[in-house]
Image (tube, helix red, strand yellow):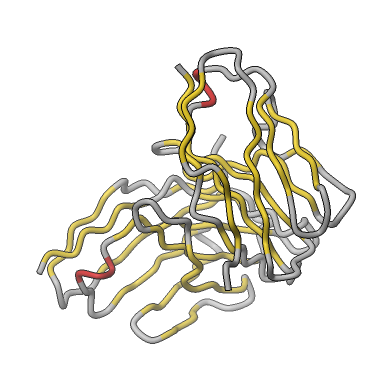
Length: 113
Length: 113
């Protein structure tokens, strides 16, 4: 049972380049999320999708776009990468229960030079 | 302004002793509080949670205490084991808010053999 799978695990970009982080979950969850983790800042929500066909901004959406391709897949795109986007990115999914428990992928480490 | 804060970036404890990790929050609208554990190069995994209507929840060696008047929660690990060495994140959510979690900055726990 794979759970939440993210690709790629590592990526180095030059400033101005674009890339897409892919995420897929096999738990039939309705909700999916993208977080970034920076030292001392915890995890901050970039975008989320409460259900297939809907997306909403989180706390730090600037410089990112997302696509909820279907119920399983939720991608995060950087159109023009900046050094401030150097971070570890986590995708997560949730069944939508009131407890708020999320299931996370292993993370994607992105470095923008 | 961080709504969830973990003021201790790190904590070192001897094996067998108690580990106490603290978390403060500012938003009185939070309904549910969760602790996540994160090992290097892995995604966060759910550890234990507590509803705002309770003041204590216990699961084996892990107990979470909630003091709503002080807007403070703590995670107790007894007895601590070397395998507990990880980064612990406190998180909070609101019912009917899309299961969006607000995370603290994390505390790195080191349990010495």
